[in-house]
Image 1 (cartoon, rainbow, N blue to C red):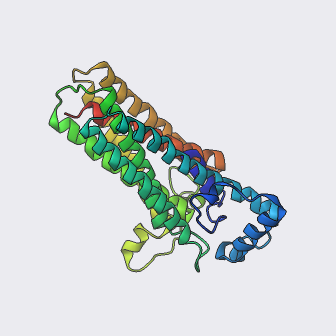
Image 2 (image 1 turned 90 degrees about the horizontal axis):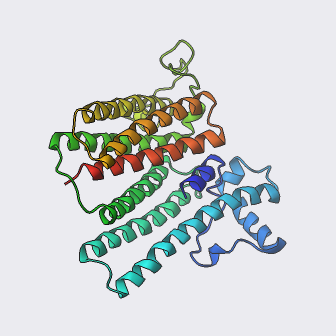
Image 3 (image 1 turned 180 degrees about the horizontal axis):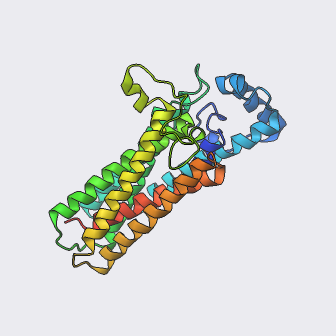
Length: 316
């Protein structure tokens, strides 16, 4: 789902389906007439009129495919969750605690679906792009929903926990929160296509800390949330901060008596943050080619997974 979502965003396919049909929308257009009707509907909206008025129906089919596949997988995830949940509920194989957790996951999944359509809707009225705020909400909720699902699975798989140092756990929690903020800014980067500017590293432009043509928004705080240059600067800075926090976790953990799983979780954090940092650098240098953009997003997904696993292993 995350892979297809990344491809959908990076290929600008997200606005190709401009209506929402929960059941009938599962089946793509069949035959020339239905494809023409879908294309005609797309032509009525800003993205076609502003960017893609040169498209023919074959071009339209190529972007329609990714958005359709993204939505179908979303529906499939719902079924994969709901059907077994009802089965185990009827068979009375779930504890009350697990039922509450599963209901929370169900709500998060439903809310994620709503945010997907809410995001698409922002690009269908008068602006030919989705709101980067709504994109960030959609992506972040997807990551949080997965993290919550993983946490419930870990509770079932590893019910016994070791007593831990409160200060060390709090360090992991702070690292987790910073990583979530970094993921939000990654979504801002994608929404505003901020990865297409300042394609140098370690400085943001050749021999310059910031690009000499950076425009400044008023009031100033908007540069932190709406200016592509400012957003890329924050995303780069947060990357260093995430690396530093995980290095601190790793060094402190070396002095502690750890279980095998705790040790593996810390090592996974170190490896994945290194991989993610390198992917981020190359994604910027090469101006976000599709495969690197998707790889960078997937690495973020696995880094969050490792962080969730680590926090679980060091929780009471």
